[in-house]
Image (cartoon, rainbow, N blue to C red; front, side, top):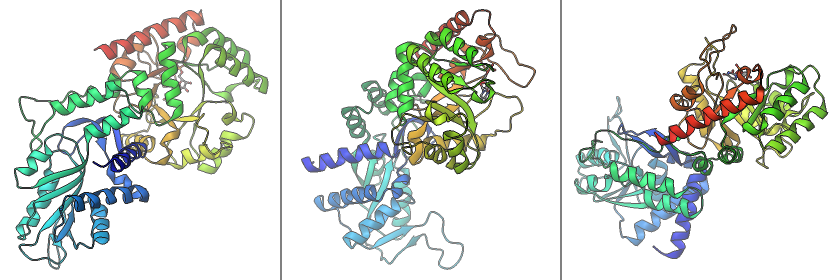
Length: 490
Ligand SMILES: O=c1ccn([C@@H]2O[C@H](COP(=O)(O)O)[C@@H](O)[C@H]2O)c(=O)[nH]1
């Protein structure tokens, strides 16, 4: 590879990571197995400069390796726009393979003008087993078209190249998964632990073109589940600066306890913050329940946060249209955006909730000192959140341009989201499993951390109503932290 090309490839690898075309977590693949890494190159259509770079690299590769054929054909759907650019810029006629034959007219599976015996070069985005390339090859071959080569953007190195070669097709890749991992490591975006964990997965999970494991393997153990990664490691994967800060604070201070300081007098909140401060990573307020709110209170609370090294979260649960949210966040009596490091928001009104919050910041969110936790689930019995809502909320938290503002999700279970760079904040925690009289359901510290993958547990009345708040906070901190270290060791 030429030095200039290597630089371009590295820059592109970092860009793919930045735009979430390349992510870490616990993902179910098309072939039915789980994976710690996932490529979603569908997003690149939203980044014309990335499309241009990727298609330039494909064209250079075709020219340098004399791969030109009479036609090009992209594997549907993600590679179609890439194949179109290559076709237009290289003046190579394109063929389009339909996934299903039309039910009317010609009923053709292959669109375009061709003759039996014509050659065709396949273009594909990501290859795991190679089965998608082979589906396209099969349909083209049925028309008498000759295929000898395929150019792919990413080879996940799980057996795809060998599988397609068995059908007479040489696979050429711009990127291998190993190259991408090493580039992220070199750039300080991920840790060596992550690279080694993915390398182990790739070595273990080699598959045939039907997605069956090669060798004796029966199931995939994904060490890369977010609950198996340390907070330090996850800080490196975070897209939001506030989650990095919070993960690092938790690791340094050895606490995953958030205090819900739900009381109605300012001096009571300040007393709780001072007593519990040494044991918490986060203090959560409901600022609108304070009967004697004043600006001095905010200054005093901020001073305590600084002294004891914890962050402040206003649990406002914003839920309105963007414009109203921006005003509720920045204006009124509480001017939340001026002091709360973090806030919570429902996803009821869609992505605009994040844009509304960003608009409430004087710099539009540029300085990255603020973030939001989106609600994916609630602890209240009979709440109306269903699986579709939960899934859609996780998408808002993990996809799109505003993910840099999302620090995590407020949720109860491990399946709410997979991305390890987000923090799971779980309320409804008490030493004794119980309920209150108004629908709150409690689980124990051990249960929420070990079984339900909570990263931070929110404790309110369990501490606020204890005889000694500091002793209670120390006890919750110890039990929650022990549960986290057990979870890592398990
Ligand atoms: O689903 C949710 C979301 C937020 N909360 C908040 O957490 C605390 C819990 O207080 P406890 O006294 O420990 O019950 C409270 O501020 C809620 O508003 C939640 O409980 N459930």
